[in-house]
Amino acid sequence: MDNLTIVEDADDAAIADWIARELGQALAATPGPVAITVPGGSTPFPILERLAAAPLDWRRVTVWPGDDRVVPEDHPASNTGRIRALMEPAGAEVVTLTIMEEVPSFALAWLGMGEDGHVASLFPNTDPRIDDPARIRRLTPDPLPPEAPFDRVSLTLPALLDSDRLMFVIRGEGKRRVFDAAVRGENDLPVARLLGAARQPVRCFA
Ligand SMILES: O=C1O[C@H](COP(=O)(O)O)[C@@H](O)[C@H](O)[C@H]1O
Image 1 (cartoon, rainbow, N blue to C red):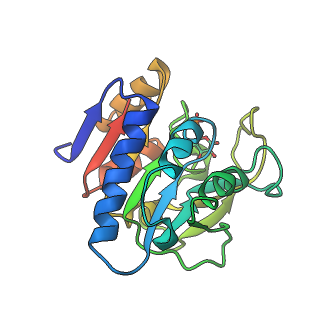
Image 2 (cartoon, rainbow, N blue to C red):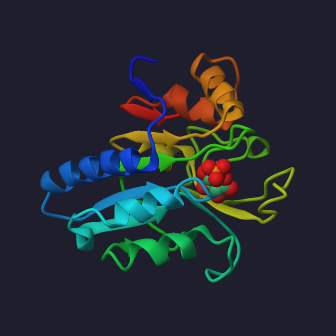
């Protein structure tokens, strides 16, 4: 993949700095709002905490969770609740993901990945398609991940691909093996489908 850059051993502060620079450039390029999508789970939150402290015009930034578990926002497993708690005090607008939303084009689509190759909440059993006519779907992972055994709402592949840049943060050897195999086209997991269709720059902090 000519459009892929893998950055190894970057710590949370370095990743937050890189995102802040990207966002700063996107904000400088337009007087209007800038949308980004961010992952949930556990990996992104220390990075988001640092990012929220960056001196950006957060009032022009709309933050979209890339996916969420179907739980109330005050539930500890709610991605949106945790993202909102960090990003709203900085001044950003945080969107609640429902299937009614109009989804914008993103300046940056930041993704995590599960060891099963899922991105956002596009799990292998949900057979995500790059020509999905929907931008947001409600889905049921099968098997249900034991750490978050809930139905999901997720941006779809075309919604994630409608972005100027894609970025992953993946930690651990198991995830790295799955990601590298996807890059080489050796599997057909959701991450491989996304990467296979990506034409924008992709950066993976691994
Ligand atoms: O369930 C989810 O898992 C993935 C991976 O999370 P991580 O903590 O292992 O990085 C995450 O990207 C997704 O947003 C989340 O809902």
